[in-house]
Length: 599
Image 1 (cartoon, helix red, strand yellow):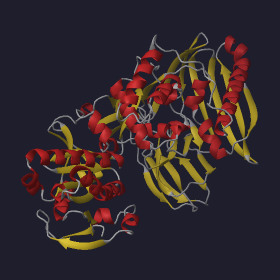
Image 2: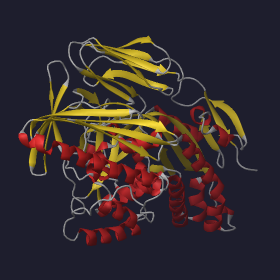
Image 3: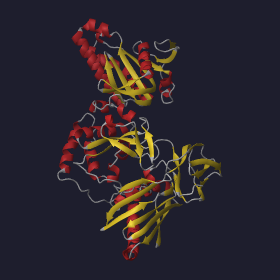
Image 4: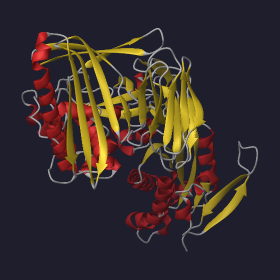
C-alpha cells in the first residue's frame, strides 16, 4: 500500500528543513515511544541495526535501514519488521519551494505481514500522516512567531514532589554567584522541555533558546549541577558520526579512546574537538527514558548534507549546491575516505565507492554530484562537513571558565594522564616592587592589599570568559579560550588599577600597585598538578617570560597574540612598540609587542 499527501506550508525550505528533518523531536511530539538499537557488525564491514519497542499493544521488532537524504530537499527510510502487523514501513518527505513558502510531499508505504496489518494499514497510514501534518504546522507557527511553544505536549510524568524539589533548587541556583538569575527559568525548562532536548543538554544551544550570551548559560548549568538540578556528562564523541559513544560523570574517568558501534571504528581522544561537557536532568527531578525517539535521522548528524543508500553497481547523479568548505567523502561503515576542499560555486568531485571505501572521482558539472557503488553489496555513502559544530562545549573551553574552577576544583585528570590542547591563551601577571610594598606599609597591610588585588584580577578574568589557573606568590596565571578575551582582560586590568589604588590607598602613593602583564597563545599540555588542572610546556614558559619583560602599567604580547585577527583591531587604537629580546630557555631572540601605558 502506498499513500501520498501534499501539504503547503508558509515557511521557505531552508527554514522548514531543520523542523522536518528533526525526526527525534517529531516522533516524541507524536507520542511515539523511545527505543534502543542493537548494532551488529557484518562480515563486509556494514552494521546491522535492530530496534524493538511496544506501541498500541503490539510488540514491534525491526531492522533499521539507513536513512538517505539531501539536505533541504528530501529524506526517506525503510524499516523491515520481523515482529508486529507490518512487514515493511517506508516513509519519504520531499520539500519543494513554492513562492515564499514550501510544499511537503509525504509518502508512506506499508507491506503487511498478517491479516491484522492488512486491516489496519490504511487507518495507520492516515493517522500517522494526520499527526505529522498537525505537528509540522505547529512547528511552522512557532518559527513564524505565532505560538509560544513548538508543539502541544502532555505534561511529563514526574516523580512525586519533583516540582517542589525543583523550586527549592531554583532558589539555591539563584543565590549562587554563578546562577546569573537563571535558576527559575532553568528549572522550568528541565521540568517542561521535550525529552529530546534534555537527554544531551548543550548550554550553548540553551543560550540561543533563552536569548542570552553563552557564558551565563554555561555558568548556570554548572551551578545547577552543584545544586542538584542537573548532572554533568563528559562525553567522548565519535570522529565520524559525532555521537557520544562514551559518557562519564568524572573527568578523571575519561579514557584516551573509545569504540563507536554505530560506525564500527575505534577513535582517540582529542580534547579540543571530541571531548564535550553536556548536561542532563537529575533523575529525582526529571527521569528520562533510555534511548531516543529516532537514532539515525538527518538532524542526528547535521554535519552530513548528503547520504545515499546505493545498491550494488548503482550509479546515481544528484543535484545539490554545496557551500565552500572542507568535506570528507566516506561510507557509513569503516573504509578509505577522501578529503575535499571545495571552493563553492564550482564542480564537486564524484564519489567512487569500492569494497575498500571511497575515492574522489571526476568532477561533473557545477551543482551535480555522481555516486557510483562498485562494491558487491548495498552500502550508504555520504558527504560530510569536516568542521566540528560550534554548539559543543569542549573541555578546553569549560576548563578556561572561572565558574568551573570555583565550583569543581576537584575535577582533575587521572594520575599520570595528560591531554594535549592545541591552542590556549595564557596571561601572567605580577606586581612591580611588591617586596618594597611590604617594607613600606608592613606585612599585614601589604597582605590585605595583595589579597584584594587577587579578587580584583579574578573578577576581570571571569568577566572576559577566562579562569584563574593558580596564583604564585604575588602573580596570577589565567587561561582563556580566545586571545581577544585575554587582551581585553589585560586592557581592563591596566585601565581599572587606578580605581583599585584609590579605593585601597587613597592619596598614599606608597600603597599604590603597578601590574606587569604578559600574554602568549599556543599549544600546551593539560595535567593534574597539586590536585588541580594546570598547563605545562613551552607556551607556559613563554607567557611567564614575557610577563618578566613588562615594566608595570604596560602589556607585553607575543606575536602569536598581537597578530591574531581578532586582536589586531584592538591594538589599532592604542600605542604599541615592536621589540625583541633574548629570553632564557629560547634559542633565538623573541619579538613581542609592548602596549604602552596610557599617557
